[in-house]
Length: 220
Image (cartoon, rainbow, N blue to C red):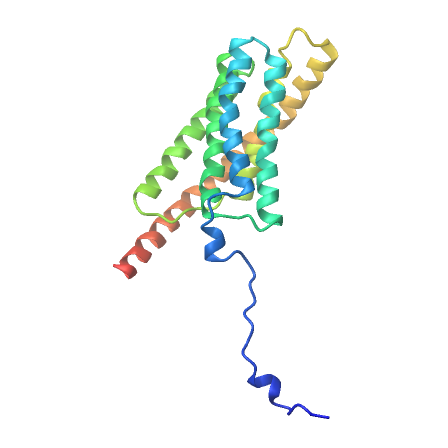
């Protein structure tokens, strides 16, 4: 019977432990979450058509709620099934911004949401989008979305479709009253979280800019 020497295990090459996606996996383009994100973008014009073309705020609100839910779906699939990619990290927040600017903008134009709330949310999104694009153009590293940013977006994606649903005169008054209460209950934390996120993104953006420029200087 052959016995292993006490130091035999020490001579074996170490097996690398992979704790996250590899560079090759991060470089993938065709993934399930990315396809879900593209579907979310494609459905935004459909929502606007149902709202203004068919003049059906209730069904439009349901569709917008479905579109918003896909944001949770692609994030869950990406994290739990090793489908995270650099492209997904870029287009997912871009799709969120497009949904808020065009989807929520449509709700504001339709007069379904309090004007002050719609203007505040849209102004914040436009300014933050300009801030992030400016940082990227200046050479900053890409920033991850913070918890407060995601929580604020989720709350607003509940609030604004609920405001819209509450204006459908073809639905029972009890249903529309429920949606109106839900809209207000989600709006307040949504605004608070969104502006807490602004306070996070400004210093993080400046840090990302310094790190991005430093990385470029090292490789130059």
